[in-house]
Length: 240
Image: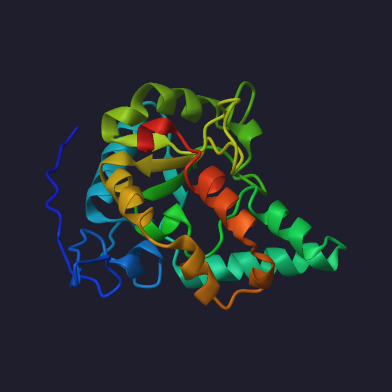
């Protein structure tokens, strides 16, 4: 496997943390972490930051030797795209009779609040095996385990993905809260780990208050604190 060096591009963002009157230098601009500004992306049928994309292509090449056609079903996602997903789900759930609070809790079982998605970073990929028939909903946990369509993909990933810097984010650990188990969601740790650490320096409450998002008037202080603790931080501990 090719191991490619990555040189961080250090930029100054106007949303940096002020210390003694000066803005702190950040490796990743806040607007990129929030998905509002698109970073430089590349990929073959997907869009990711260069180092993550090259590692995924290496993994794809090696998986093919085992008869697995590894494909990223989803990769980079902008704030605008995440907002569309959020609005569609919120509108659908409330139309079916859920209260706004119930709808929000239902959405965040699997989907993030716009501005808080790891897919904004260009380090995440939802992967499937395209050598298999494409089911109506390929991103179901049952597909990835015994007897499932992607059983072989899951077994190969469990044995090999970390060699390429990729880790499951939302594991099936019994103690974990927040987003439900997603065996398809992989994160490129060499980039996503430092990005998460910078992301956690953002004032999430203040950021969410600025978003003109359907349902956001129901985001209480307690909800935001719980969301940050459980949905953003209760992940595979290797990625923290």
